[in-house]
Amino acid sequence: IIKMSKNIEQILDKDKILAIVGKTKEIGGKSNFITPNEFGIQLVVQNSNQEDYWAPHKHPPFENLNFLAAQEFIYVIQGKISVGIYSKKDEKFTERTLNPGEFIILNSGHELKSLEKGTKYIAIKQGPYREGEKEYIK
Image 1 (cartoon, rainbow, N blue to C red):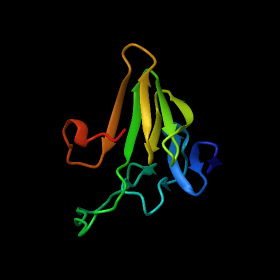
Image 2: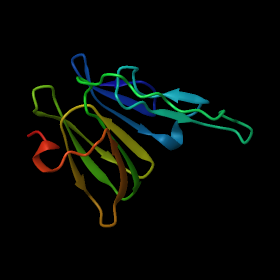
Image 3: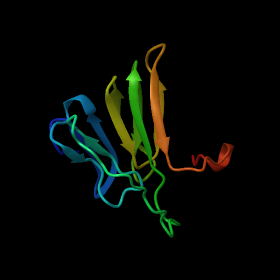
Image 4: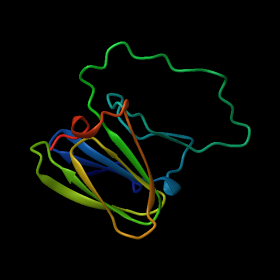
């Protein structure tokens, strides 16, 4: 496990990043690139001022993503979630509890459990969604 700062933690199994955990409220500085360049999900925490402006733009599609790992981003709005993080050998490696304002980027097998009634979170992963058994590997 590597602490990138007091607010960002990388969870490693040897050389593989299994997950990145952070607290958005406590990340300072202007532009904070949280994920490494090779991740399919790129996370930047921006702390902007009223006058900051980004000119109109769009991002071009990628030509070939055949072997890009499917990753998932979870941000807790309210309540608590327990996240089980699995190793490269698909064994439970560690667990983290996420509170409101905290996030995790998963780059490995995982399990989720809501710990409070009324828990609300945002989950983002690459699409398109593959129905049923095509979406999950056990």
